[in-house]
Image (spheres, rainbow, N blue to C red):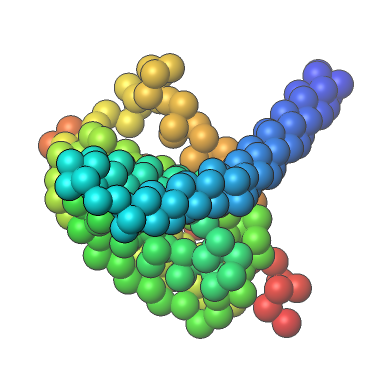
Length: 232
């Protein structure tokens, strides 16, 4: 019996380590694709935009100028899309300015892109959060807000971040449609997102609680302890 327990524990530890490597690889790939979009696709579209403007400025045919202006508008829209995707894949603000500023950026993007107004409350003494923890918390907030946009049928949501010397607490809530948490976890089509959030949090030794029921909104609460050496 003791041997079976030890084997199960070893399997659990191995599975957790594998999940950690997979998520780390995903984040690295996100960063790589983000850089390529910015450095190659973004620069190529910018150059195309400049050249179209030069041609439009020198064109004498009004019909051609109109067509060139329409083409320029299409390129501008494509460039904006590339920039949005670049930021979604690897928001540099997370590494440059910290978790709180990244959540401010996320709330602004969700409002602009999806029309979801986010009431953001930040209560933090120190935003020097280890990168792996910051990424995990940010991705959970991103997933939770995406789910609200897709399923909650509301125009408002709330995000609260509290950081002290011991822990991080993130709360994302809405007063929308809600859902049956147990049923969602048993449905493969719905459980992937919930599992992904839970796994990210578990890999940084945190916990996640999802409170919801049909017609009563949803609340996601994440708690992650901060390493002591980061606070000395």
